[in-house]
Image (cartoon, one colour):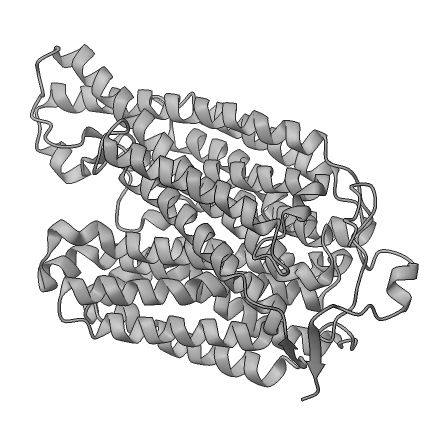
Length: 535
């Protein structure tokens, strides 16, 4: 099968899932279930993060605390591309409902955990289901709504992200204070049941049966590579030194697995991730942009609250509120861009503007100092958020528009995976740079051998612990954090330049649904090895 060229849209081969037109009312009903599911996926880690100290106090096993998050992250990242492919092969509705059920089962079992080992195992199960939630939402949306019309619904997802970021820690704190930590997991159940019921009743798709063999070897190799990469970014500079044999060994495993994966994918009938997709220029470029967006966004959300709490004295009661200016910029711009794309059918200019604004926002944030006012830093955050608002949904839109409809799940999972891996590397690199600069500044101000009473990782000191230190040490630490932010966001701006270059080379390919039907739209194309079964 020939691959679509970069200057033409992917042939709109209509599968059994996309044949029937859907009314605006039906789409709105389905979108309700999708939005609830997306909220479910995004709230989980934000709620649980607030309850972690209480969980450790009840279950013990503080030495394994990081694995509560790592197990979930690993399972989510590793399963994301597999869920996307299964949806393409066996039907998006059934695959999506299965992912929700697995996530809810993992949530219920996590809440019933009696020790840390059980919690870690059940969090992995929960993460396995979570890997299919976001991919399912995006691929179903891509199948139901033509790219040209998707801007009408784009703002919903930006609003959900803002709501989850701000409300997650608040909900987690309330549950921990007024109920108990078990309910940080149980709260997923009513939301999940609503999503399950809405999708089950309103989403009408024919069942799909595929006779193609599952690419088990490709799935194993890809899972191994993603797992190794995730462990590198999780452990590097924390559990093990970057140059340690453990990290170097994981790097070698990741490289070997991914090279073998590329070899296998070129020789199987139904590859887990068709490498031919990357022959499409726009798909490749938007994957690069998605990686950079994840890199900058996740790094920012980790270190900006630290600066606001330690240097500016902001309350740590709800860390999500500290990011409200960035979320505001992202939400407003995302809404405007979505409407503009729907009205004009043009999108190429937005990634160019977005990557440039994101780089500019990073440069502005690199000027943060101990004297920067809260208002000024908030304005800088709005700029960074606006840049991301130009990009968050556009990257997914272009990825889905670059492939045939039968590959919608693979395109959605690949875009999600690149953003996730980018975020992992962003947090890891920013963390290493930040800690190094903080340590260097502390030594410069307090003396080479002086610790100033700072114990452990200097980049992880709580505001309460800082207040207990002598005034000169507090002042040195404030300057150290400000210097660390300077380094972090300078690097963020430098990485954003890569995204600018990728955006410039992107081509304006007509969006499906933006004009008269093409020859490919007029007939139903036959997909090999896939048979629709009427409901």
